[in-house]
Image 1: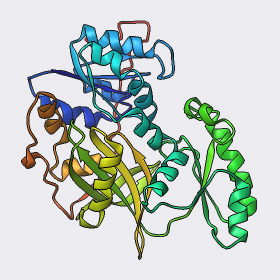
Image 2 (image 1 turned 90 degrees about the vertical axis):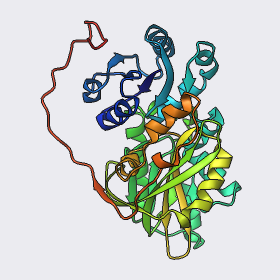
Image 3 (image 1 turned 135 degrees about the vertical axis):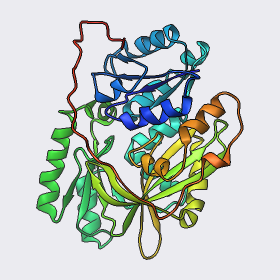
Image 4 (image 1 turned 90 degrees about the horizontal axis):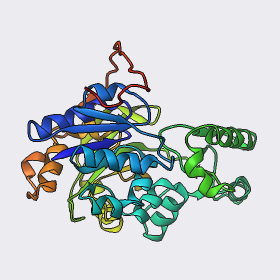
Length: 346
């Protein structure tokens, strides 16, 4: 079976993981809206229209049919929702989408809905507000205190995130974040909530962790892998350490049942002296998955076995603890092909 990784970006390592897993039994294809280094690692690739272009889905579907693609896995938040909304179209053409239901993706992508969902289900999360006025009122009442976190409601990575130490900074940085939102790709999803594109959140003082919550393709909980985030850069874990999952497993199992996702649900959380607070969720492989992989977990190989009707192989899902892993950037010379030539790798 051939697999397509959409919105691959620069994640060459993810392509390599899947190519090693599929070996000679299929091909790993990738897509992106512009040429990236990850395309060099794939068996074939396609440069697509932008995710919100009306021709995006048709270009992907035609490519999948022409290249015998059996399953699609997205690596980008914006892509998830568009794909999920067209799940039946792909299914009718014999193509499986490895993702969560539309409702779960909306909960993850919209951070205000994330807050409401977690609160409703009695899962600790930072106090969150939709407006400056309500945040300031809560500060005046002693419910909230500076510093505060300002972040795009539909954000991804660290784009548009700021920390305010007082009311003046809060107002200035709110405007700055809003400007960034509507001058970047965040404007597409943010257009769903034009009047409230930003959330203001309680600052968490504690150790940050990333969780990979693994479900099988029947939405059953399988395992959780926990990484302590030692060093972050642009919202991605650059240095991390694998740790025991016991303190986090109850929350992970609860989220697994509620979200009904397939594959990995990425969860960001803080552990304070008193409790664990979930801050964000993504229905996809995230920047901290490589830590699990290098510590022994082979999600790509397990996923391929599930896709082909196989059972869960526990030997593929063992994560060694106390492993410290660092991502290293390696400069390379890349020859970028012209867009007006054949977009498929020869």
